[in-house]
Length: 216
Length: 211
Image (tube, rainbow over all chains, first blue to last red; front, side):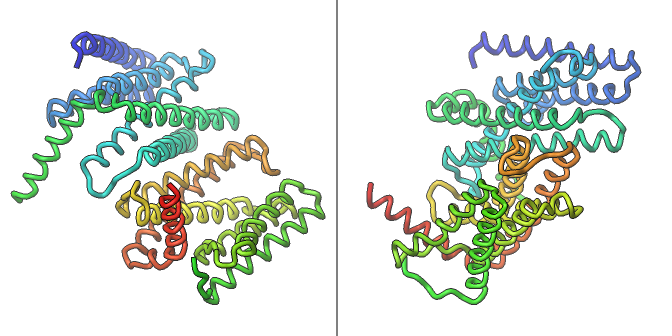
């Protein structure tokens, strides 16, 4: 990877993580238990790429790592600092980034399964379709979680019909956007460049795993 | 494609579908629901015309799908044209369930046929089941968009209504995914999609020849 880009990635991730840790303490100070748990869990999630790298030698593509941290940062910032309620369209922007992230993960997962698993081989157009559909399904699950939270914890995550429908629409747009972006990247060969280290890591991880399975 | 003799359930499903579409067309005409008039006309046209023009061509859907289409069309017809959506409690949910079952079943059949007859897709049965579930959830979202934009006489009333519909879609998708995997394991899905698959195969071969 380009050293300059690596530095920028490390800096951005570090900055966002630091702010999230600060938000965690703010939520403790506010005595807001929901967000204490939420922000604590989000901070833990941002360290998952590092754990993957340390324990399994799998390096996520830099854009994926930044996207994960950014999406979590938006969600936690929106909740702890009430930006969901005070900044117009903040909720929609957070939805767009999250769905873009989900679509990116879907694309990467399908690509890896296509490369390394006999049970799946997909044409690029079929990949685009599955990425869009999986992002829409993720949007539905997100709405179910909000619905469940309102029913069980008495929160007010669902703001009404228009809000729910625009959320689903933004999720769909995020999926469509990433699916076509990923497809054109694949066509031009940029996807291979972007995920080169990641693919090699996955390949060596699977090779080791298969060898160990054979030994057993 | 050579026309083959249809079995009793196939004939029954096929006739019931055509009867429902014609009945819907007539009621829509009487109620002056022009979108439904056009929709039914197009459906009847698609169903009949190919066999009228080319006697040896017969687009044959699995009878289970034809029966499901007839059920969904009937429920929608009763719901919209006779106001059952507003009069009978739970009627909307019932229609949603059958619509989603139809979508999931069609999705499974299409994926399976593509897997068997197209070079561009090889898919394990569990991956198929997964795509069917998420595909049905996504189709539920599209249906909600249709209602949101008030197309085809549909309308949304509340956020709970949207979420209940999406929940029913998800359950239907899971149900058909489980049934589909079971049918593949027993080798029955092959029989079910054989006719449609062979038609798809001949179309693909024809396209290759023309190239």
